[in-house]
Length: 342
Image (cartoon, rainbow, N blue to C red):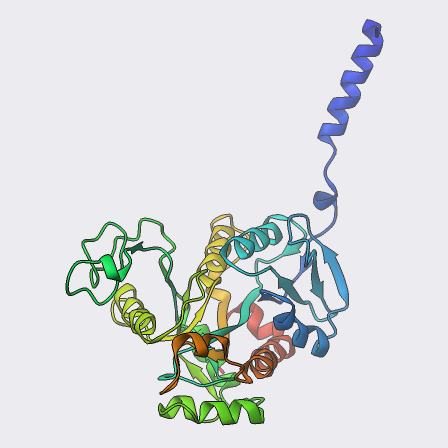
């Protein structure tokens, strides 16, 4: 049993330990010019290979598969989150709240692969988004059990059926990115030389859409996020209509992926905490596959097809997004103050 003087001494020591600042409070946050956000290894690899991201910064709360933020001497950093809504929200939040990075003047680039609507682009195309639309927040009735005349069993939460815009009770249903930044990255990257291959060239010829059969290029159209890997003409048509509905007619559905609304929401929480500026976010998705079959092909066969799109999509993330990152680093005094006019 401790004596009263010893108990008092131990209590005082405990108070002193609690009052000591943590490691994160004593080390100055690392400045970041741009944080590139990828979802899994193949998306990250072109950045690691080309940008000398040789500084490892471990962050508590990241995916065990990708436990470090990678940075280089130019204050370009890369976060790999893990795939899907839950992983990106957790990993992005962990970085923002870690106090290890100064993100107050940082730019953010979500750079990932996606499926693409053949009416808008082709394998290897690089699409900058204006709208991020969530595909998963909805009611669903199997269309075989839906009311007579319904074209789809998907409809807005707390609405009476398809075609009715829901109230955004979740606050994450749709986000519009900053137009000034969007136009600047389009101007910088619009003439990028994109990777292609013979397998992708042959596969895209099977599609009748002009955009699908053409060579890949940089385009502007919008992205739809949901953790279900859907496929086919009917769901594809719903994707087009859903994007229009939730964006009040402005959005043009183009790419399908899993994560972007969740990443945006994590960054938005960071802005609300005074830690970053959400207007400094750009979203780039490159096409690794078509979201629906070509004539004579089933939806299932299309989903499983080896089209040649995957390797060129991952490479084109860097070929396109890297042009912006290089400009940002080279002209940091201008970018630091805001999006340059030229």
